[in-house]
Amino acid sequence: MCGALTPEELTRLAAHTRKSHVDAGNELAGEATPVDSYANVMKGVVKLTKGLDDGRQQVVGLQFAPDLLGRLFAREHPTSAEAATDVELCVVPRPALEQLIATTPAMEHRLMQQALRELDDARDWMVTLGRKTATEKIATFLVLIADHSQPGHASGAARSFELPLSRSDIADFLGLTIETVSRQITRLRGLGVIHLSGTRQVDVPDMDRLRAMAG
Image (tube, rainbow, N blue to C red; front, side, top):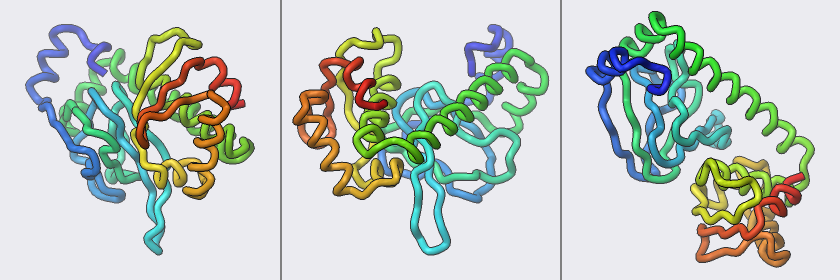
């Protein structure tokens, strides 16, 4: 967000912003609660969920640095947001950011680009949920985390990262059972596509091979 601003505009925005650290597992925003601020994700992963009346919930998205957290111009949050890992945020009051958007075409353009990218990502995820096999779903999820954990790396280079979600949340996100998630992770490990250290540390020796497994 700040990359679209001039030094003068950054100074104006800085007068209203504050840094915030949120530990993993804590809620950042509740579904249907008023939107009184927005935040840039500076570090960490945010989990977005939708709830049903009977208490069930669905993980509907993940946000990474430098995504904007919060639905622009909405009165209420359409989803709940929770820190999946320890998260660092740059928080901006809603009136200050919306006023700056109204007077700064470059920022409006930057945030529109993010909204369109999220729409494209949602459509891609519909394909993952609707058409891909369980193995392809797990591989697609691992590619997603790898690409956001270490952006800028060569596409086929080895990667090492920590899973931001529990296997239960991965199952919710992918529309699978926990048992299927565990079974498919074990299968990818057995094929040598990934190596595991503990329950969440993942090493990928060849990203091109993982992408191929993702279909």
